[in-house]
Image 1 (cartoon, rainbow, N blue to C red):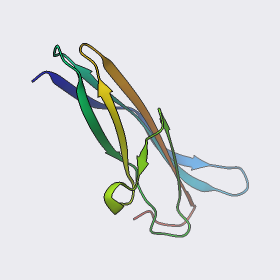
Image 2 (image 1 turned 90 degrees about the vertical axis):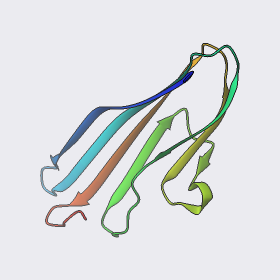
Image 3 (image 1 turned 180 degrees about the vertical axis):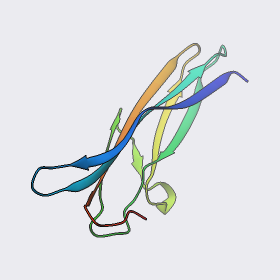
Length: 109
């Protein structure tokens, strides 16, 4: 009851870009916040995920602030992990942005 976690999608968009060559693009920005409302420090292992590509034409990039200490946690592709101690009354925020690009005419599955 003393630890609160929220994951809020701050921005999500999909559209086309380019003048001569056209490509489709989608991006998402999320904010993950964890807050300790107790009077003691808690060790946390926070997990989140990013999409992974199974199509050669699909390019996926992501950026996290702060960067995760672990990627592909327990051999699960796209799973990111942060380990930290959360002191009493402390709040931590992780910002995660993901961008997907694929050529026009291709179907994203």
